Length: 186
Image (cartoon, rainbow, N blue to C red; front, top):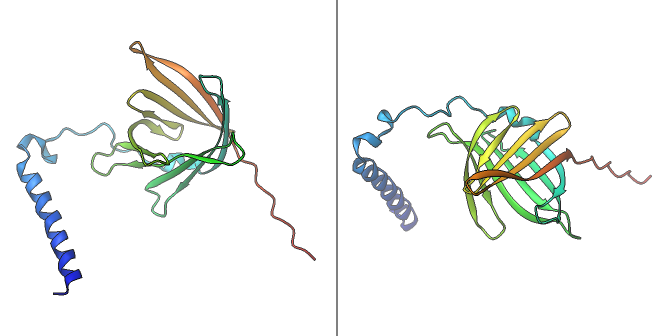
């Protein structure tokens, strides 16, 4: 067997063996057959289709500084991932704030959001209330609500303070105006 094929075979065999060992090592109560059904079953990303496109959001951060961002959403080819990216427009050049995906976890049927910052930090959040009106992102210390409206969407940001949630921001997003195509020279 060629060295490259042998290496791939060894890697595949190792992954399979680790998976089999991990499943065998689990107590019977942790196997999927005995776990209770999740409350997430039946949710779908299709209801978020109105978010697809490019949006401009404006408001004020809690410290008083302006928030001026471009948020773009698009589905991947399988429509199982809703991709997004956010750029800060408050400076002379747009600056990437984060990018990420929204998806339904095939293991439990729950909605998830993963954000990645330009420095590589990954944040994983559970989604709730995922439907055609938007969704809620339950972060470790934050609670973000995205609500789809007739003319755009609204982002509400709450933080935990002294054991209770406090609204610190509400941004309104409107669809970015289309740029007219340049006219061809005669």
